[in-house]
Image (spheres, one colour):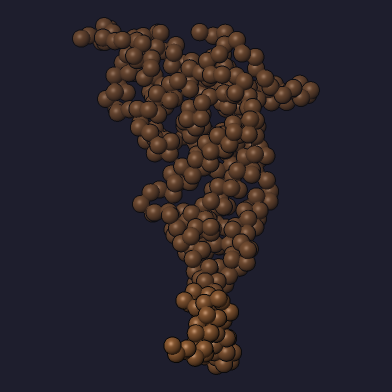
Length: 212
Length: 168
């Protein structure tokens, strides 16, 4: 039934884009307006432009490559579906980060609902004595050190509460300002500052437990 | 206040602000004040160095990889989703219009056919049925008459009406 409706929808509402556009030269905001009009080429250009950003953010948040790939796809499908709601008054990247952050948070909640116990759930924030539950390291010595360090970092980030985690990822890896993070997380700049202070304290405890 | 004298400070508060300072946040005036304080406070300098060390430690040596078929997979899923706002009633409405329109046409057609059949084909049959039903109803109503047919009362009345009066 849904497929049938979608076919009817396509026939009824398929816009005819006869104008040849130089998509890569357009801003993301302009591309988004074309996407809202049903322009698939504009959407394809938008995907190519922002896929790495979305993927990286989700990967830093969850620390799992496979999951990040799937969720990044979900983000773009949602962009397509909700393109009509996009208002060009807000910066596209802010809108994109907000959408991605919301998907990350809702996925975290659904993971909890499904009782999939992430490392962070074993390893409560601020708990010094909790064991570090990590996958066994690979055997090659040189790669092992780097991989181990990467795993420690990812596990430490995932041990943070969702908003702290998001703030750290957006600040450390995406290099966003506190103002932008506040818009994405949906809180005040002062709250972002507090989130990052607490996140740093927690990360210090995880990554440098012996140092004061 | 001379350049050698440390400015008044509360290090516990300043150390909380170091995070924002390390991130390059704050007004130029506030940053200058923090810099002046850091120049004289080894404890805060140490804390700032620890924050920098932590941020450096978060560097991921092995960057994640996106699937090579990521974009085509998204486009394929997007086609399945069929259009912006898919599953949103505002966008589904135009697609769903043919179904209610067809249903309404069918209902109207059914009413018309029903009416026409009632007026022409079924008229006589309905009339016959009605007269038969009326007869049956009247017969049934007879049970409530003062002298129902076949009753003792009817027999008595019949007898009275047919018997000649005996003259004295």
